Length: 90
Image 1 (tube, rainbow, N blue to C red):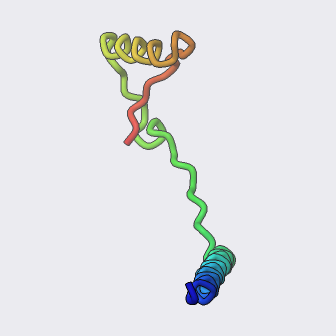
Image 2: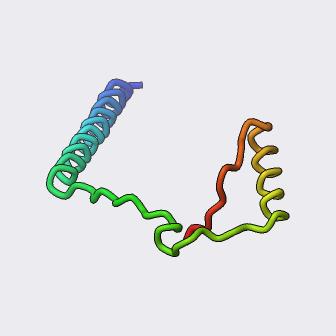
């Protein structure tokens, strides 16, 4: 029983040490993220051209495949979706 106050002191010191180290890690992480975003920003991706522009005219889809696609879209969207155009994407 005589070691109980010393044990609580040790507990408090240990938990405060862990808390302070975690705070340091969090703030250095935020600082690192800010510096990387400032000096090495992410490149902006250029919008991809459509397949029709790359390969000329669009690829035609046979009637059976088109009806399967329309049925799948109708089932997934609950009848609210509509297929307007089907293109091959490369």
